[in-house]
Each structure stands twice: as C-alpha cells, then as structure tokens.
Length: 217
Length: 217
Image (tube, rainbow over all chains, first blue to last red; front, side, top):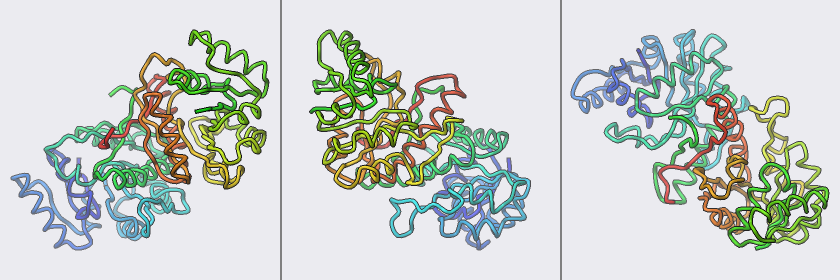
C-alpha cells in the first residue's frame, strides 16, 4: 500500500515510516520543504540499508499515496490539512494529532469540533475517510523498529472499511489495534495522551502507554 | 478506614464492599432503603463468613464514613449526591459514575460540567474532595474477590492528598492505581468506559479493561 506521512519529518513520522517500510509498504515522507523530506528519507533509507522511502513536498506526497497520515504538532493541524485537502479527497486520512495545550502539555485544549479527528473530518469533508490512530504511542518507541512496543493502538473513525484498512496497517507493525468506535471516541483517545504525558513526567519515564486487557489479541 | 458505598446495592457496590472488607476496612453499604441495604450487607457477610459489612440508608451510611463512594447509575447521579450533600462535607467523595447515553450505552452523554466527576465536585462544593476511580473495572470482576483483576485504576481529582488516600484504598484490593491528574481528566477516564463497553460487545466478552504499560508497578 502507498502511504504518505504528511509532516513526516517531525517526531512520529520517521518511526512510522521505518516500521511500514520494513513491513514492505511503499512510504513517502512529506514535508513543507521537499529538500527536508528528501534529507529525512535518505537518513531512514541509510538505516534500512536500501532505498525504500521517498521524500516529497506534503501535497505531492499526499497525491502519490492511497493512505495519508498526518503527524504534525497540533499548532499546524488545520493549516497542514488545508494544504493537502484536494489531494486526500476519496482517500483514507489517518490523524495522529493531539490537541495539547501549548502552554501546558499535560492538559488538553480540545477544538470546538470535540477532537482533532472530528476537526479534520469536518475540514476535509465527507468523501475523505478520517481515522484516528497512534495517539498513545510514544515517538521514541516507534523510532526504534528493532524493539517491540508494549502498547496497543485504539483506532476510531466513522467509516468501518477505512478503520479496517488502518487496523491492518497497525498490525503490520506488530502492534495490536482495537476499534474504539466512531470519530467522537477520539475525544477519549486524544485525551489519554495528556494523561500519559502526565504519568511520564510523574514517574520519570518516557514511554507510558496503554494495553487493553480481557480482549482477544 | 470507614468507607460508605452509597447506592451500594447496585452493580459495583457489592464487589467494592467485599474487597475492602477482606482488606480489613470498615464498610457500610448504603441504599435509599435501609431494608435493602441490610439485606445486601447480610448476603455479603454470608459470603465473608463473618459480619463485617453494615447496611444503612444512604445519608446515614455517608454520615458514618470517612470516605464516601458513589456507585449509582448515572440517571441517579445528581439526586443521590443531593441526598448525601451535607453528610459528605469535608470528606473524600469517590465518584464511580459514568454518564453513558441511556439510549445507547456505547456512547457518552457528558454533562455540561464536562464529566460526572466535575459535576459532583460542582454540586458538593469545594470542601468535599471529589476523586474519580473504578470507572474502567467491570462490575462482575469486582464481584468475585477470589480472582485477581487484570486492569489498572486511573484516579483523578483536584486534591492530591485525597487522591493518595483513594489510591491506597485501590491498592488494598490488589489493584494498581495511577494518578491521572485533575478532575478534568475524568472526561477521558469516564469516556474510556463507553469504548470498553463497545469492545465487550464487539468481541463478545464482558471484562475488557485497560492496563498501563511502561510505568513502575
């Protein structure tokens, strides 16, 4: 599957790119700057030992892909969505964003839509199928593809088939995905991230996450 | 510690009562009807093989305790709080409520305050220290005290000492508690319950829960 990671040179993009490339997916890293995208892609290909990840400007990356993943800080959420709006129509759009309060990241500052995911769905319109995923996985855990991650991925969105596709892509990384319901569930999933950040700080760790218990794996 | 479980004859009260009684705490089951409270207390004492749980009308149960736990369906949330309002002043009040949509319990219907916990804090006033806990533990798991529960308890509230007391009471049941931050975090913790209900239905299980990963236990 062709996957673009828009804003993919930041914290979570490189780890997702590496893990999907290792699973045999075709990955394009997107950035506002094509040069920056190419540079990060080259670094990741160096780690992989082969050229499997390309770098393109965000809109061209989105255009080249079937599934478009957004990994930008929340401050760039709506502007980045606007910059790829026409390229993601009729595609699956995976929102990894978490609307943390920029002044106090242990706290959420939810947008009027209720969550970043619902905001993205409203901004992109009904023909783009928005799915939330990966909000609760620490970036540095994703970034080291030689280590298994002891966390599950809650996935939500209003389109069942799109969720199934994303859950399969989560599974290809060796992670377990669970369908947490409609886009509205993103209020909980995104909100969990601020609780995990708080627990990281309190317990002086970096990779707090959640696992589901009592369910088939 | 003297613990009252207001609305304690319902789904979650008996399990909490049994587990705390087994841990040596002094437990009073509260109900709107003293007769009903006494009946459930007698049943639980029968299981324990000794008289360690009392039954009283809700307000008298709350009056007799240092820590008051509320376990009623959300439809009775505010009315029950009002019925014990004066008895819980200057005490710790543990809210276990989840504002599920009565017409569709896989969905939340959050009160204007943001969560049941914040609603309780607003209704009881600042001298009652409201703490959220146990929202994500299935009642039937609590009810069987011979079985360990493979789930963690997220605790939140605006008073640190009150949270510490509640976390210690969680620990006495053999469960691990984590401090999830201020009362506002209850929006996430209560919301998680609807996701767990959804996962229970989808996977045809009854006890989906969460565990925290990457943290000291």
